[in-house]
Length: 294
Image (cartoon, rainbow, N blue to C red; front, side):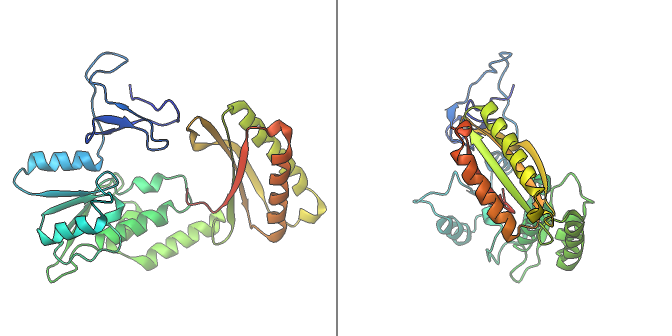
């Protein structure tokens, strides 16, 4: 059994620093049990977070120093600048971190960079997933060999032949652009079209789903009117958000594939005002996000 958050549709994450299981969405936290509540067997701590990587390195290479930089280690008394200064000044051999160590750092003595789960971002539910993965990999590859010595980067991935991975390893920006712009043109995603997300939240799932279906019906009815006949807009959903429940609030969304013209913006604003004034939607909130990064 994997312990789940009682407030969210998410698993709890083990943090060895305080021996607790924590939810990364709402902050819910409980002491980590020693035995599985379902079968009574020993609790197994699985995964490859930064803490686990640090532990593995220290067990295998006990004679070298390891510094870690992530949200658990950074604080007002231990800032990014202090960690990086200590890493360089004391010549600590290894620095482990999340994406915050990949961007914009000039560390001339770094000659080897490793990326764990380099393909993880490819599976995000977002049209920018390939672009984000390519950016992250090219940035982290660029951290190695910035000084007089040559550098080397190693990327761990389950899909080593994937075009995004291979082009990022080569830092081939032009070829990646050609590949990505062609795909976006076919799918009519930005910059060729817009993805408008209407998210509805509330503590009663049936009421949220009913509000989403009603909003979709109103939108589709209005889109058939003569003044919107020239607007090419496809309405998808309602569907659960990638994390359907956060902090006791259920979340459903409608996705509009369109070009967000002024008439469509005014129409959506009108529908949101109507939605908030409808007593049937009491307890349900709705908001719009255009070309979301989430």
